[in-house]
Every structure is written in C-alpha cells, then in structure tokens.
Length: 314
Image 1: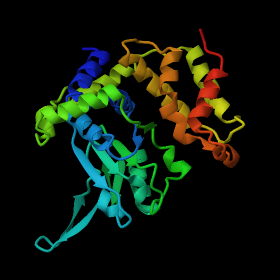
Image 2 (image 1 turned 180 degrees about the horizontal axis):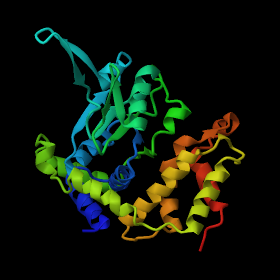
Image 3 (image 1 turned 180 degrees about the vertical axis):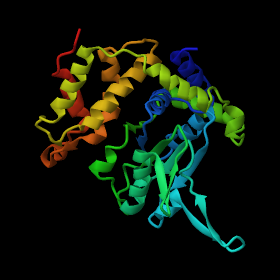
C-alpha cells in the first residue's frame, strides 16, 4: 500500500471523531514521517488535544499528556531516581516523556527550566537521569499547544527553542458546513463513548517506520533544492525581518516537501509541495521588526511576499 493510500485511510478513520481539521491531520502525519515535532496554536475548543489523541490511536502509538503549569518541574517530565528501601538501591522511574506521542499542553505556561528539559529531549531523543542516558522510544514526537490569547502568567518560547519545532500550525475555526456537521454528529451520537471505540488503528508503529524508508526514495531535483535555498535566503534579507530562517529550517522544508509529495501520490517533489507547507515550517522561525509588528504585518504575510517574488522553477 502506498503512502497516499495510508494517509487516505487514516484521514477517513480520523474524521469519525474529528471534523473540519483535515489539513491539521495531514500536517501531523507529515511531521511524524520526518521525525519532527509540532507546535499547535489556537483558541480553546478547536480539537488540538483531540487531534493528538486520535493520531496516537491511528498509529497504535503510546500516548501521554502533560499539563504544563508554573510549578511543573523537569523531573515531572523526564523522570527521576527513587530509592528502594527493600533492595537498598536507586531505581529509575521513567516520566511521561517515554512515549511515542507526547502532548505538551500549554507549553508556554511553565518556567523556562522545565521547557528546556523537554526541548533537550526533543533534540537529542535521549534523557539523562542521574548520569544514566536513556533512549526515548522510536518514533518520538512532541505535539505542544499554546493559547495565543492569554499572556498573563506565560513564558513565551525563545527563538532558539522555537526552531526545534518542525512546524507551527495555527488552527482556525472550522468551515461553517463542517461545524454544522459536527454539531449534528454530536447530537445524534453518544458523546461519552470511548474514543478508542470510535476510532480504530490503521497503521502500526512498525509500519510507520517502514513508511519513512519509502520517503528516502522521493526524488528532489537540483532546481527544487535551489528553489528552497532561494526562499530561505530571502528571509535573511527581507526588509520586515530581524531574524531569517536557519539552516535547520531549510532541512525541515526539504524533508517535509518529500513527505508531502509522497502523500500526494508522487515520487518526486514539485514547487507546489514546497508552497503548500512553507508557512507552517518557517513561520515560527522568523522574527519581525518592531515597526512591522506594530503595523500588523505577520510572518505569514512575509512568507507570501517572498513566494510571490521568488522565481519558480519550471
């Protein structure tokens, strides 16, 4: 079965419980296949937590949810050593980060020290507890959420840490037709039915690993690589930006474009693949000038401007 067929099956199954967020699901699948992490931003009630739980069920991955609060400590995430009075020895108690999919809910509500513990694990895919280095399960993906409206009592992620997220996805309200279908579905169903009874696994973690091998066969022509470089380079010289996209951003964009091509049934990348995913891949890696921000200019607008002014390979 091709990657596109897997994605179609996963989408069909997910929409039994999550309506109006097809693009979100596709981006989560894309991010998992490039072994990346996602930052979700949206107002409460749009299905951010539900989407993460559904994706874990679809791929039969282990799942944990960590509610980030101001008093959360790094060991609450990574784990710690516990002294056993019977054996007179220390034993490592693994924290909730030792799962395939970890939902970091409201990541900007905890202190920088705790944020750093999570982000280090994201980068290294390992955790060190009392000088013992433990590997995290494979695949491993963090889906972090943040609320864009409330700023009191929050600790915004600095640029160096934001850069570790492969994508930042902004979730908007669903289309009117989808939202009406959702209301009708909720009213006609028993909403207390367990999620696992509504959504069934489609692919195993082992199969997901094999799908990643298929991605390596997707061809990226030199002219496509040049196009990616030109887009990234343009962010470093744009009049509205203090900080442009990093080399890590270029790698993420190239990798994600290969997956996006496979998800659309092709074994080669075209410019449209890059244009489809460039906003979530680099929007959080750009830093606007204060004057531009005060004028209401957004990083998405800057990206669109760069796309419009960069020659597209034919």
